[in-house]
Image (spheres, helix red, strand yellow):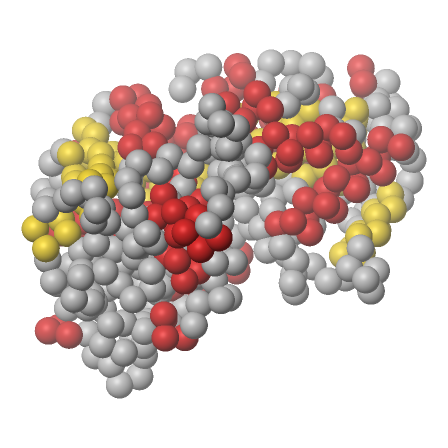
Length: 462
Ligand SMILES: O=P(O)(O)OC[C@H]1O[C@@H](O)[C@H](O)[C@@H]1O
């Protein structure tokens, strides 16, 4: 990004005391400068400080200084460490008399945890609609093994490897037959052959109830967003504690922390929910990656006009149809439905495909891939329904935990992400991964913000 802007990252010290507290110091004067702090929240990516001349360009337009160094830039750092570093750095710039500080967050942290609605009684609602006691229902990696209402023993929606988390016992990483699941490279473990000559992903066993052994309730301490949205898990927590769960309002808290630290503006990309902007009382520019994704489709998918754009869930349908409509392509939707046979039984998750994908190239569109449960399950269903090829196009490649192994072991033919999150390491481990560069988009947006020009005009035709 700095190279695209023709500036050099400014010098800063970013370190940790032995106690784990963050230490930050800015090298050089920021007085009257227009400062941009870039934090992409990927592994090993501490914030980078860019600054331009004072407003109105009176001090020239380029950044100065040299890159700062973070001694421990990967081991043990989490998104929370980076967030605190970011807040401290924003505050350091403000107290250093910067004229304006913009937090450039290509992937906005916590954006999948927007505030939840409150019920009349005051507790945030978690959307529980059925009486259920902790049965996995597919969202967190446990699959119901039914397609179109017909139990199918050869075809499950289980997550391979299991939904990640340090607390998952090794037994949860085994198939129901006790056979170890593929490793991070997707290789079948020694001594285990794909059955019936089929790929390993296809022929995984399920238990007698059609569910996998790694029910979501075993994964406390390592939730995915799917877990968070999962009524089964929430009900299980409630059953354990005997208390009604009270969900944190993380969305507005993150916004408040950034504003409180001194951010004057936020520049981000493809927010999971665009309503997140409403948590801020400072300007938020939400850039879009879909022009890049569209260009990729047009230039890299032969006969793309015959392809089908697919949304892996109802929540992403608007995003996917926007691309389908602008390219004039067919659209299909994967619909997940949970309906208990009666009120005393756990609901079965049923994945249904709405649309025709037979012999077609399917282009899965979503805002992000984290554990890769969503896109790998969708790919299985699409191949099952006769898709010729499945290519996933996503803005944010978070790819945490065993996501890469899951993709390697899946029928996905290709996964295309942007570098809103650093992808170098992921690419080393996944031959199916292609990366699109968003630095040009961010550089142009920063240039426009600095000169007071319109940012939305960048996406006017999309
Ligand atoms: O299934 P993983 O990759 O963990 O999560 C990605 C999904 O979770 C949703 O919030 C995203 O919009 C996407 O559909």
